[in-house]
Image (cartoon, rainbow, N blue to C red; front, side):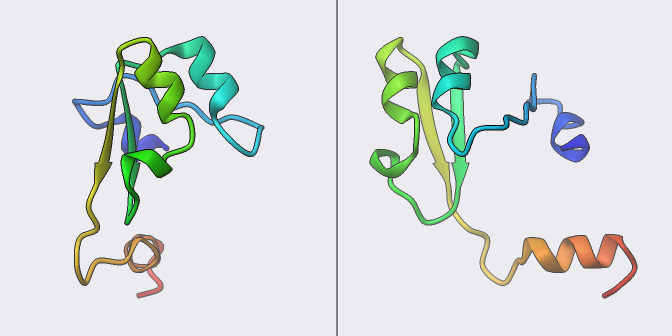
Length: 79
């Protein structure tokens, strides 16, 4: 979370205890909801909530030959 929060384009990074973000999205009302992976906007949980108040939902494509797990292991000195 600290790495994401350190990005200049990121205002907030928030964890939530629920299994899905609907409750959080209803209260925080982000301008943009971003989901990574092979999803369509219609598959993003909470997209309907964000779009209902005029927010934008974006899906970022996967980067080929890039593994989050491999990056974390490298940072930890295991790779």
